[in-house]
Length: 418
Image (tube, rainbow, N blue to C red):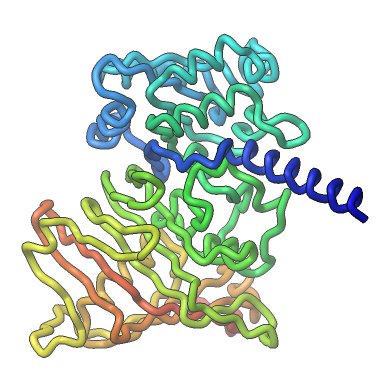
């Protein structure tokens, strides 16, 4: 019996060591560095984001390792990023790691101790966009272990450097990543499975949080909900294009760049298992804009100073004077920026509820077909802020309730009038 207990203890220790290595958490240290997670389509002209990467890596003269691994044209596109970062004062260099369209075998590069040492000595790392599965394939061995090169990236993070990336380089940040979902609606209708629609990421982000990219402009907040529900995530955050989340100490997120991010809170959400299809009750949504911040542990939101100096929108306050007075029904809630636009109007509206629909337009054009109703509502926890200080109408919207249920779309959806 004692021998069996000793053997069991040994296997537990071995298993724990393997998990710590896979997550970069050897010796249990808390990561000290920063993450810059860009939602994709990062313009070269977006100097605030690029400059923040250089700053967090160590400033002028700092070494930044550029990984073109996800790109279809790794050398050309990678060298463009190297040139851009060097133009901002960095000493960036290209890591020739790619699974295709490059002369060097990625397995040799990932195992090369000299390349790993050079990456480890850098102050920062940047992953280009493209196909995220290429990054994971190149940086992990066939049995899922870290390569020396991935260990080097983790050491950059743990010593206080910055790990950054755009699009595919954002997807890999959480422990589970979206791998391949061609249409957002299919994630709601058909669900997601490991090794198909989703897969293991590299796990730099706080493990309680799921991360998604191109989230607002492509309606991907809905697929994030499906993935979070399937994998038991209580919290998620989706960042939009040309926008970055700056994650400090894996505790606080600042939003910088063009648009914003959506925080998805399923900690109080429930699902009716008797309903045939994806459904949620009491999910909570928070929209963060440029200059806003959120604490990942408490979910406390700090609006930008410009909004705090301008107008608070509290539907429960006697002084609340909303701009809009309309009942909102959005025909395609998965459309380009449809969801954040709805949240803006809902927080600044006399009405306290709005409806969004998601369905397959091609199927509905022919016949009755499945769809989903997204019901957004304000309650006593909902609050917002507004400013025009940035030259446009900018909102922060905190704690909107979301209920999702399957519906049937009447079809054919329309008939031509002669």
